[in-house]
Image 1 (cartoon, rainbow, N blue to C red):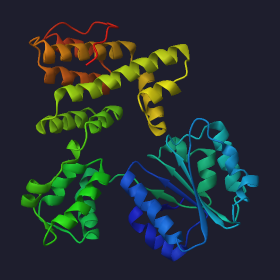
Image 2 (tube, rainbow, N blue to C red; image 1 turned 180 degrees about the vertical axis):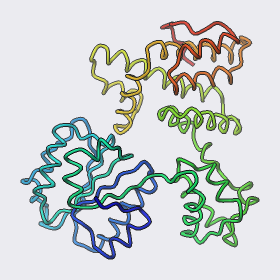
Image 3 (cartoon, one colour; image 1 turned 90 degrees about the vertical axis):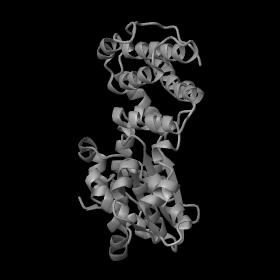
Image 4 (cartoon, rainbow, N blue to C red; image 1 turned 180 degrees about the horizontal axis):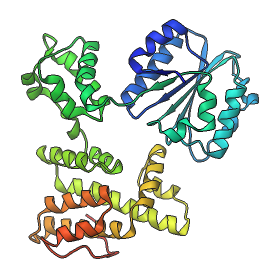
Amino acid sequence: MQTIYPEKLEHYLQQNGVPSVLLVFGDDLLLRNDALSSIRKYLSSDDLERIHWLQSKDFDWQQLSSGEQSMSLFGNKRLLELELPDNKPGRDGSAALTEYAQNQSENDIFVVIGDRLKKETQNSRWFKALAERGPLVRTQSPDKSQLPAFIHQRAQRYQLTLATGVPEKLSDWFEGNLLALDQELSKWQLLSNDGIITEEFLQTSIDDVSRFSVFALQESIQQQDYEGALHRLNRLLDEENDFHRLIWILQREVQLLSALQKAQQTQADTNALFRQFMIWPNQQPGYHKRASQLSQKTVLGAQRLIERIEAALKLDSGESPLILTTHLLSLLCCNNADAINQTLSVFSHGIEPNEQFIHL
């Protein structure tokens, strides 16, 4: 299987043209978008019909069948983009993708888009069948050691020069969110008079990615990234965000996980639940997985911690809201209620299972 990295994709397309199949997989949204933009740009002069699909629970795999393939509205070539949020097409999807690879129309260019590529996916029949028809574009976030060089190259796209020490500082701020980095570089291109970004310039204009939204804290929790969650919590508090608003985000997370656990036990439909909490389809598999992984004791303990945080904020209970919130993040990210119980006993009573929930 041929593997291409995003920075080499345009050269590959210029030398070889666009293959019938491209597999764009990786965890970095910026690099993924770059790859898709390069493919679309290269095909922009063609008389091409573009169709983008997002796999969902009720996705109709018949759209890939040989009969559907030939039914382009105007008889032109088609760019078909299929996004697999969880990299798991299921049994029907696997069969449909394997069959498609064997019977692909000459008028189609097929781009499959997914998240971080795991060995089980690479070894699947459908992936191997598609990989025989085109390369893998690996849009993986660079390692921390590679980030300064990547950021330096990215800045050159915007005619920016980064002073000594700036790439390393930006690496600390933007690790794991290169899309936000790119947005900042685009903004600095307009704000900088001479195109030179110094540490002094950063101090006056930087909008640290960790502070762009309280929902960034939610992302760290979903990824079970405890250190990242603490970092974002500190940044949010440095910006003097309302602590009640931060707790509302955490409370919402715990409420959803608790409701999902109950729905899983009764095999109830969760679609209405996700609509109530406004959870996007591509986020839903992750929530299902976390609700299954977390113990009931952990979720009940998180509920109790929310109650104690509110008592500390509103009733001056004597406990530290920040310490309690730190332990709440540990509970949600690490799923160890017993360890949190032992640690919290220093401050107050332990976490006892309690269905009662105080709404902020």
